[in-house]
Image: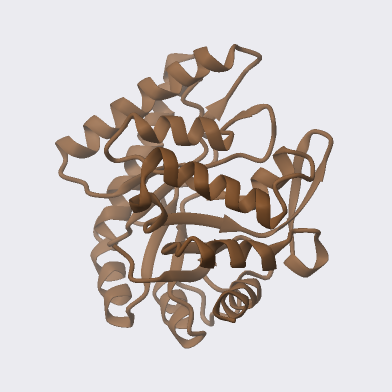
Length: 276
């Protein structure tokens, strides 16, 4: 369990030279950040052979790792091959992530596809059950983290993610506060609303969930359909200062990943604000 809230980057910091995962870990340490997310968003791009080297590099520098599974996942896919591929992407990300020493694997669980939310919940729950059974069978100890999503067409409101987490031992939310803001078309951006979302997690999942949180934050552009693209924090309306206050007030620990286009700059900006 993390001793504090660690700040880090979604992938290798931009200022890393030459660019490699190990050098990224080293750069995170030099920047006085505490964690880094391995981005498997296009593919699970670390081999079984390479993973122990990454684990060793992270342990040596005292940098904690998390993982983002590939984007093309839909546990509500109607076509069975797509469903099985989605299960496999998450399982492979969990397996390689675990070998790298990562604590947590994030994924976008699925789409409504114009179906009843209760039906979609049931389908996604079946998929997550299959993945949890597989990781237990292989002795993989890693948190499975369905992420709050940025568009109303994507499954993953805060309530849905929390409800899913209540059903499983290995599942806790990944709360992307920027996605919540975009999904609600400009709401979820005040101290009161941040507090309300953290209260919901604490009430339904216990204090433990706040002491091992996986968080994504960036600036965000949105339309009446939700998320459009990530922005630099200071070029957006994302109220990161009140968010840091709320995380502080709730004594949140875990991993906060900056997904802004300027990765480490915004990670450091949030860290500084939090430490005030």
